[in-house]
Image (tube, rainbow, N blue to C red; front, top):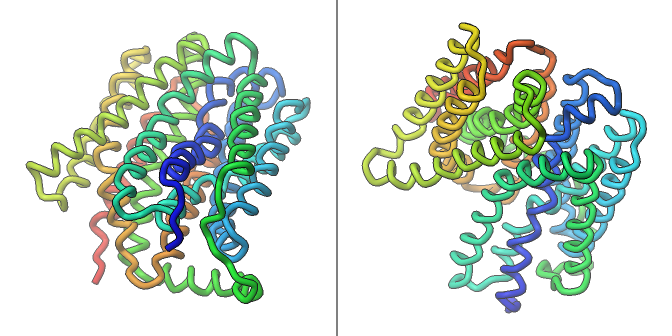
Length: 393
């Protein structure tokens, strides 16, 4: 393996996942304001999250394959520019169709940002540097959904909804420029390899992976559990701002607390691994989260909709999800032993695709009482729990 400067590679591992993350979470505090601006229903505006996740799903699946054949840097630069063009569409949009198109382009452009950190870890670092890089990547990955809505709420109150997309543009432009100037090409591709590009091979290998029932079970559980996070992202702003009359910046603070709950769940997972058989951790965490959702459901149906009945159960529900998530991800990542690369790419593809479908469906069932939030939580955690009982060889 060719040796690269470890500090440079670790730096890019730390920052390259930022655009994809803020593309999901940062603008959600602005959703109610965008509803007023574009004069569309809340459920229609929430589809801007769905289309982003759909494009992100397909893009990271395809971009991973293309970057194997053409190198990481050229695909990163090209898709980074696509992300920037999509962000400009969002900034200057005066019609809903334009911002929907812009969000689609953002998702397409974000695909390479989602998969390249793992590729850099595998290709450009000596084994002794990998744990440090993984620690920084994990920190960045977990902090983005915590900080992004908080920052988004502040920008919304101070400068309006467009400011969130201006922030995305500036941050991504800096990252793409740094990659152009400083990121070395870590994928050594010869001309013969470039000539062997066959997307049909990607499809056939993906079908083989999807024939692995253990893999499908693991990824299905993972995407159902992960989808609780974007469901909060699309429903939470409307419940807190429209029903409970909180400002976007206050919503950002509450969203920060929800992210902290998920982060604390990761710490709880470390404790549970020391005292409980890992085969029972997922079921215990899912059951706990489902109970939190049921408690919230009962409270809201009883007419007790308030900041406390929304935030406290959701916080503890996210603790349970954060504690179970690493176990499900580890199970999905190790379920396929042969076509490892394709299986890894498919995890992100299927999670985002599932999240796109779920966030498309959930807003259809609008509720003036906010009960659609706990209903979604209960259904998703219950389905994830049921998936765990599927028998595999």
